[in-house]
Length: 180
Image 1 (cartoon, rainbow, N blue to C red):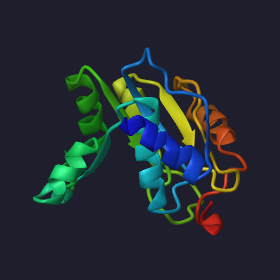
Image 2 (cartoon, rainbow, N blue to C red):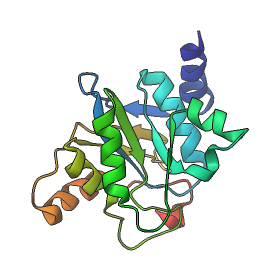
Image 3 (cartoon, one colour):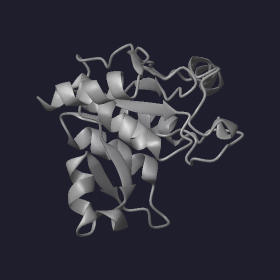
């Protein structure tokens, strides 16, 4: 029943399209969603997860998981992360993949909602360290669509890999166009 409601909101009320699908056969991968220019991206991500019946997690600083918001964040797939200095965050997140039978991690490659010249590389090194593919998702407010890629398996050529990844997002307009 709720899935029908989510579809109604996404497709009819908001008028968006969804192209592609999450790989059902894969239980572990990194999802990068871009451009991340607005808080609206969060609820679009939640809608897409529900429409596609795909559990997808995210990590956030552990301080956000205190009562009462911690209940909500855990309920929507959040996992607390210790971000104190000196921690190897890439390894800590890769360990999450290794400790779970199923884990799909959503990350904004920009690392912020503002315009950046270069993406952060953490998502890439998390995928490499955890030995999982990357699935790309667009937040294209210009075309009112989300596009999901086929799984991309990082190679040992980061520069070439980033060209492939960024090509997927070429021409995509975020909610706040000046940050796209």
